Length: 280
Image 1 (cartoon, one colour):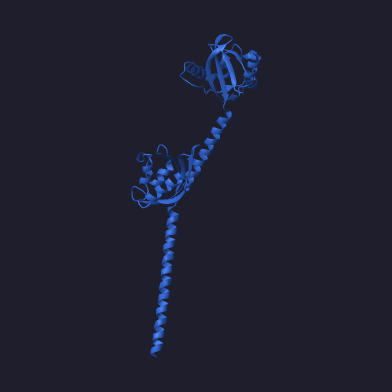
Image 2 (tube, rainbow, N blue to C red):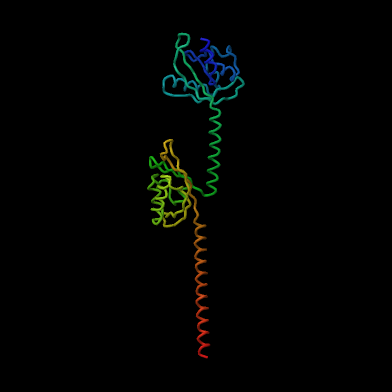
């Protein structure tokens, strides 16, 4: 019994042993130390006392659903004696205590998980803001299920609306310029096979006939066996840059053409001068 009690008190989770009416029979040291109650203050009281008054009805309803097998856990936080809130995930199982039917409640502190979720949410919000401001679209391709997910910016980049996009790989291909489709597909397949990174440029053809240049990069995610499960990437419009480059190329070609013509003209003049001199 002493070994059992030592084990019971060594567990970091909050452990509650309850009678079938939900009254506390005993708790482990974690409950005493972290909730700041004495054992005497808890024993015989409803376990609902460790929840905020305004959420006790909610907690009681969920506990009833867990006992009936209709819910797996209760997300209602518990509170310390000084009313500091602790985010927990509580589960309840049936058992016996001192030979009588009892309920065992295990509440796991999820403060760090909640904090991580909050930080992740903030990071996602910042990323969305940054990508929206920069005109960057984010996409995810589920290779196994052939499912392609776009954010709102992706639809704008391809000149389509979400209701016109099936979410399949073919839907992306259909938006590519006819001359770039084969190359685009080949580069995706090479990235999936691990032959090269997906870092490319291609043209998209909008339904109204507009042609836009797109820069695309992506990473390939694999499972523990090395099998590809998804690709996650970004697209952004580089039409203005490409247009400037093309115009510069045309200007350079024009200048080179003029230079060549000047050279040929100079050569003709020299030959004409030579001919005149010979006739004199």
